[in-house]
Image (cartoon, rainbow, N blue to C red; front, side):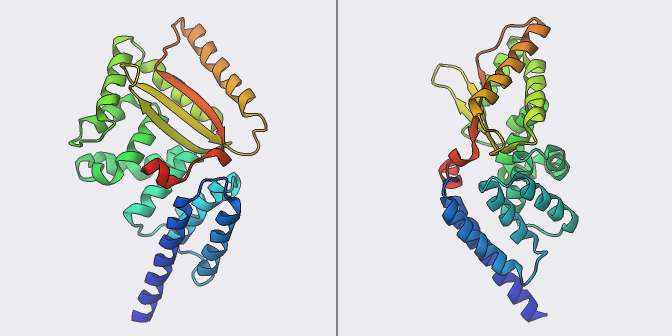
Length: 260
């Protein structure tokens, strides 16, 4: 038993080493990413159902724009289950949201939200990502109400206040849900940027999409038309503190740069 535990520890350390390498690479560096893939598979041969290894492999497949492979791994990890570290659980939930499986992410986050005071420090980024992607203003408020000195907290408070003052909260929620649903089968990463350089908070949603989208500009135009159509139907003015961008996954910066 001791030997098995030692071997498992070695495997998990190798997977974390591979993840650290992946986090350093822009997603355009396919040669280096594929080299890490070989290293992951070499370790997985010893235990093909090691969920930590499969989660790192899922990340690597997203970086290579293999949407269907990443989704298949997501379901496989779900079926296997087992104990995850805080880091691999965060990564798994983040990537469930990234590839359009937000319902699964919500199941995993439910107990975290139910005990938000205990979990906010470890799961803040993924909680916020889920709340925004799902258009759940109540959850965003709940996150902001938690005892956390996050740099984005005041900007989010300002954003929610503006939406509330303009009676836009429900429309924000509806637009988020519609655009997420529209893109869930081609999306490989869903990123949120907040800015306050104009004196109020701007929220920018960046959708990094698969190679199936041959013309990202045309796809962006279709998304814009969806927003314009929504506003016309609801007879509301287009609010200028929320925008959406579409980018090819190859333009995604290294994760360490985003986290830095």
